[in-house]
Amino acid sequence: MIFNSLEFAVFLPLVFLLYWFVLEKHRKLQNGFLVIASYVFYGWWDWKFLCLIFVSSLVDYLLGILMGRTHEGKYRKILLGVSLFVNLGLLGLFKYYNFFAESFAEAVTFFGHRPDVAMLSWVLPVGISFYTFQTLSYTVDVYRRTMQPVRDPVAFFAYVSFFPQLVAGPIERASHLVPQFMKPRVFNYDHASDGMRQILWGLFKKMVIADNCAVLVNQIFASPESYPGSVLALGAVLFAFQIYGDFSGYSDIAIGTARLFGFDIKRNFAYPYFSRDIAEFWRRWHISLSSWFKDYVYIPLGGSRVHPWKVFRNVAIIFLVSGFWHGANWTFIFWGALHGLFFIPLLMTAKNRRHTHEIADGRRFPTLCEMFQMMSTFSLVCVAWVFFRADSLSAACEYMWRGVTTIHQDWNVFASYIAHEGFEPLVMILVLLVAEWIQRNRQYGLDLSSVKSVWVRYGIYYGLILVLYIYGGQQQDFIYFQF
Image (cartoon, rainbow, N blue to C red; front, side):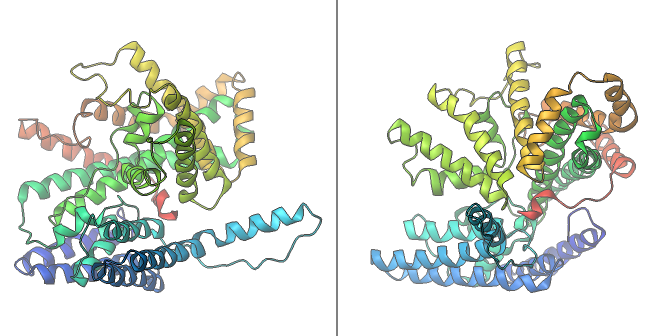
């Protein structure tokens, strides 16, 4: 079940009404109902994969209880090891087995013989990377004694399977979300209406920006040899906004939906294309994953408190692992490596924390220097996105080579492509950028709480609904469902 589907349009109001109007005064029944609703939501794709999320939840719930009953360090390490083995084992089996098997076969081929390696044909469970990292963070926190074990199984299962953010995040920490399942929840009209606004903004980014860009991106990346470099450059830019509209749109819908049910989910995107360098970009892009790697990989490796060369090593590991997390393909690993290469010069010159304040803070427009910084950072990000989007490293290199060597060819083709294919998506992207620039000090682009006029606010809301109706593109799956 996807957010921009007819099924979800029926599912959400039904769950909302039962949750508030039938079970409002019964917290435990609400939690149990959310578990059932979340399993229905997840099982809509393939009910057989429900056993995976159930096993992951059950194992980590029991391990957390056992950790809470012992203070013996060796036994606690064994329990943590079991959690890592089960969760990463399931993730590795479903997501990475074929990658490693194929890579092994390719490596052995250099010695003159290609072994017959068994490949698995099953489908990757939707969202397995997200809920695996979510449950792992819980067991690690309990092991570190930064969190007490959750003794309410229903609350824990609800935390792992909470349907708004189950499939593509944000990756929530148990220390933030579980306590919200443990206390009574009272319907708040202001919170619910704010959630509806964020859902509407997320649908705009997904259906109008991402889905319309996807059509052109698919055409361009399918046959790059048919276009001059100028159109290929446009294709990279369109994909940058496709993946941003797709993923941040999902996060907006997830956060807004959670607010409808009285929950607060942490922000996952903070206008990343207004970043002035790569370090700032990663503080604004997929914040929940970046902070996860920081807390559970980077800091345990020593973080920035070790020798400078080890700091570079730690940063390189983070970006490579981040790339690998996204998928079992060398393109993702190279994408992560590229971002590491972009980041390390900032680290070497101690400029990676230079831009921690809001851009053009207190001003309406950026300076020329800030404009140059944003454009430069966006260009680097687009170069990396080519490798993320391409089917293989060779296809990405061919795309980049043709883009560079034919950039000067036939600008009439570029102008014609803009006029006949790209005009509407580019206009919508411009609308998105203007809205987010104006709202850059707020949580999301449609936060109009500061607008006093009711007529203006509702004019914008209904205007956006009309735009969704007219320009909502052909329904596309969310990109991050594959991760």
